[in-house]
Length: 392
Image 1 (cartoon, one colour):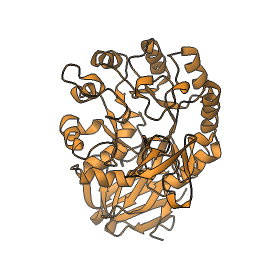
Image 2 (spheres, helix red, strand yellow):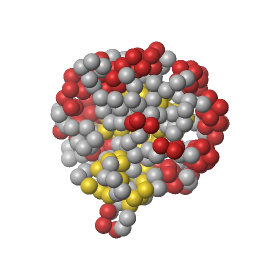
Image 3 (cartoon, helix red, strand yellow):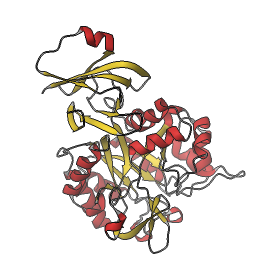
């Protein structure tokens, strides 16, 4: 495998921004991160591709742990080929790893969807698939969002075992409602399988959230959306996340799902390593609405006021966000660039327990993104291989 050295960059390692630096990748992993002065003193053989990134930023590749689709392809297609195409297209957007997110569906259909999405793992042409995110079916009928009530299920360990087997052991994270009966048994099962549980689509009261935390439900699906709201007599789900620093949370930074000023509250009250940027992007993200009807999860959606809305009732169905725009928005909402990049790469890797992703340190995977001060993506590398390269 060829080696690559990117130089003349400001590098975010996952810990700090370092100006006038270079990154060397050998055998698909980070070999070194060093100063421009050291770069100028080194001599590279013909086997090393040396690339001047012209003053751009280099950061660990973006990791989207909650995404349903992109560019007209989505998990609701129930096709491994669609997930593979998502992989290719997402790499053009600076994403180097993602968790294809499945909507709840009727039991036979969800089992088949899990099987199909799992078949894409290992066949990616762009961003790597870390594993699957199941957004249900063990969620609250009182906080559906645009999920369909007939697709939900009471907690059922035999159903969970069937989902696990259908995934071939590739379920990484799962959205659940902590208040559901028998959730403790489900949480203990998922802990043994290494599945990260996240509270979402939940009508939990505060005590339900605390009980969930005690059995390992320590992450949160799209904070503020589809969950019980903060109340002065019962902090509920939102309050629990803000009160307890050990809880991490997803956030959709499109300025529509969450008011921009709430990011100031989030930044003040949550440790910076507990905030995970996600897109929750739908299948038609990146498509031109003028070209015809757009569909997500089998229903027609329209692009309106910065988000996709379900046509039949105007309920917000999901975002059309990309990770690079999310990073840009976080900066616009008051985060430093380092904090925004941490939320887009380092934090999701840590929360999902992928220890060799999310930081640019020797021995870690050679997954990185190169972008300029205007937040335009110029290059993406996965395992040290260019998936996008505007410098050639």
